[in-house]
Amino acid sequence: MVYQEVQRALVTVKGVLFLVFFAVGCVGIVSTQAIGLKLLKAGSESRQKLIDLTRTQFVALMTFVVSFMSPCKITITHDPNSVPESNYFRVDYKGNLVSSLSPNCVFIGNHQIYTDWLFIWFINQSSRLGGHFHIIMKNLSEIPVLGYGMKNFNFMFLSRRWESDKAMLSGQLATIDSNARGVGPSNKDNKEHWPYSVLIYPEGTVVSENTKQRSAKFLAGKGLPPLKHVLFPRVRGLYLTLRGLRKSATVVYDATCGYGGLKPEDCGEDLFSLKNVFLRGNGPRASHYYIRAWKLSDIPLGDENTATDDFDEEHLAVFEKWLTQVWFEKDKLMASFYQHGRFIDPNSNTSNTLNKVNRNTVTADFKVRQISDVVGAFGTLAFFVILINLIWVSVSSFLA
Image (cartoon, rainbow, N blue to C red):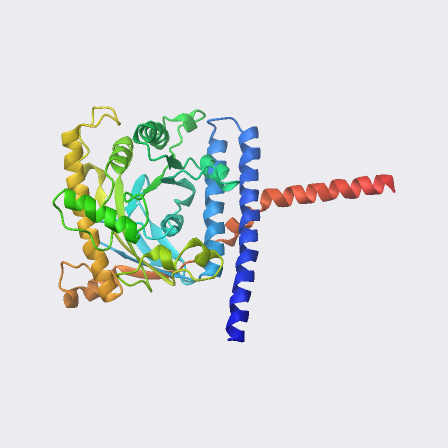
């Protein structure tokens, strides 16, 4: 008993130390942003590259901290019938995930824990898209330090009031889309095309007993059976996102996520809360993803000639029908995951597909591939510490 208490205390101390490390790194990143945004011309290529660099540093810093507190494996199974042939997922000799995703893409997925987005960002980082990653999420802009940094990342914060969210999303999506096509605000100096990857969780929140009940009630009102493992998705935000990016987006990736150690009746956030992940070292030990894809042109998005936020209810209903089918398929995938402990297509003969699944599955370590990205987060702070020290030494020598 004493030994266990000592172990728990040591883990907590370790968590506090890494949280301090993380906080200092975040201060370093936003310091780099603040100085760069003051010195660099708005709309310049250098300014855009600075923000992309700090995105890379942030995801590397987060990955480094989580991998030390809650070591994890990440397993990806992709559907070869839908994922573009040019895409791949492999593991190098050091256990790092290496992938090739199509740029100008949108990720959608089921939302189980508050750190879901980190694993998706990590996958994009392995494909050199980590510096071009955008998240549509609830408003966290008021969080000290982090909020400032995320605003500079151009993350899209939702207020859950549709009229204001619609205006905000339309404007930011238009900027991302035009920059990708070489005609946006970040293309004043040249014809640079800025790729992107945008993540949105259509469910809007994580699975819990309360949200499952609300989802079931909503589905019952539509005459549909309840979803057992996922929540019914909200339609308008995703519809607007895809319409806003339709001139530049190439692929929509659907990433169905399952965590090792969770049972069908469990709510992920109860076991893998932020406190458990960062302070207690009780994060998921295995993160599984089943990735399939659609060409944007194959998704019903209504009239291309109308304004992005001009919704025709008939077209929206067609899109909702498509998304509903996607989410019921996702629910089947999750049921199969809980049954087999891995993602296997529930509509196929399991015994005949295992070899095919193995060929399209890779397992990598969830870890930083380039430690230089982590070190870079502290670069600005280190520069000022050295500068202040030099000034202090010089002044002390002069006064001596």
